[in-house]
Length: 291
Image (cartoon, rainbow, N blue to C red; front, side, top):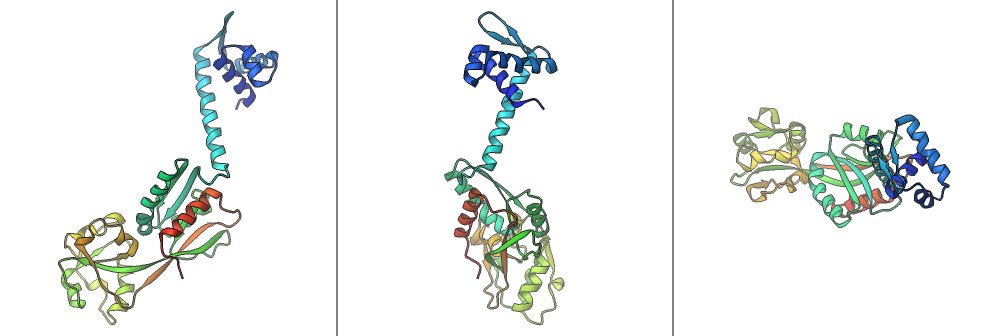
């Protein structure tokens, strides 16, 4: 790695075309600027062609000037990341797919109103979210189970009921209707269905006895077969709310709902930056608070 002052001297000489002007701009002596260029040329070869009224870059000099621009851009990114400003920089958020479908468009709304803010979002299960926040790959995460790792701070974020969703042209009154319609599965489908159905239909023979009409591991597509009439499914409410064609589905009125709490997590050893705090505060306005 080259001395940053040498690179600044070279870039200023290339910009002004003059050692004298470069020295004036940098507050250095012309001898100091010349020495910086000589150090670089000792390592990289000829960088400048000295002419009476100006200097000209050699091919190696043009490559080094591009490198200087890359380094300056990297420095700008670093300053932005460490900035105390709440309206600029990158914020990384990792969430389960269901609430992620609901939150991501709203995060884009916030980014649209705050041009200096950059949102980086990822869908992930709890285990990946925990690891990503612990390894500082994301600033904050949402998980469905409160972690007991002392390196993480967890605070209640929102609550999300499970919903039994079926085709709009069907009627569901009892277990026989579910048997007739069939089940559309997803990675957490059977577990979610077992929890909800055991409460709504006590003594039922189990979701595994229902005919399976399909499977999808994409949270944004889990209601597609339901809307087309292929079967019912059980999903979190935020995933259902994010589905575009609400008129093609119905939600069963469950008098004994199953409600999961979502937890906001971040590293406990240091406070959230102002920009992350701003995003978190905004997200809390978009969802019902956990009780």
